[in-house]
Image (tube, rainbow over all chains, first blue to last red; front, top):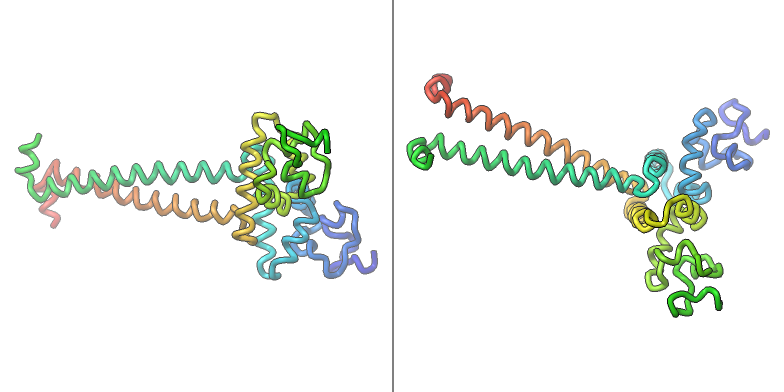
Amino acid sequence: MESGTRQGALSPCAACKLIRRRCAQDCVFAPYFPADEPQKFASVHKVFGASNVNKMLQELQEHQRSEAVSSMVYEANARFHDPVRGCVGAISSLQQQVESLQAQLALAQAEVEQMRMRLISPSSSSSHN
Amino acid sequence: MESGTRQGALSPCAACKLIRRRCAQDCVFAPYFPADEPQKFASVHKVFGASNVNKMLQELQEHQRSEAVSSMVYEANARFHDPVRGCVGAISSLQQQVESLQAQLALAQAEVEQMRMRLISPSSSSSHN
């Protein structure tokens, strides 16, 4: 436990605590999974597995790891909320929103164009009405 | 191997082949990871781990599993292409696209409204110009 101490604390990080391993000074999990947020690691462990999370973090540079952990936590939580589609559900829903907005924008732009024509030549436009 | 045969084929499914286990008649992986698409399982195995994929599938009803596998393959591939953000990168980019489209739509709608006013009362509008 002596070498498992960190920043004066005696407790291991949330990851090492959950998987019951010694939390070393250079633990790859410790900076991102503090002991007071056990749910964060529990989520990514359940979806990706501690060993895969470890591997994925080791393959990244240190300055990239915090964002990688955030995205893994996000994906893991999305998988809990939607065990079938995970965060692909959010992607589909956003894609639908984009398509709907593009259609609405095209309509509004066509309307602007039509009105512009009527403002330029009111007589020719009114002859169509 | 006798009981590992499926649909007349002698080979185990792509999952059982990769993790070197016997492919049983009721293998949970076999319907979604055919032997001729080894990359599909390799991807989800690398990101989620075979054991987690197995657990996630077991927790779902059979009619939900195909879509769950598709979403896991999608997430795994996204993680290869963007090891830092995974498919959260796609979500952020779609969210930005939604915001940009909403802003463009609001502008176009304001323009429509402004032109409508000018068409209704051209004289009052022209007095501002």
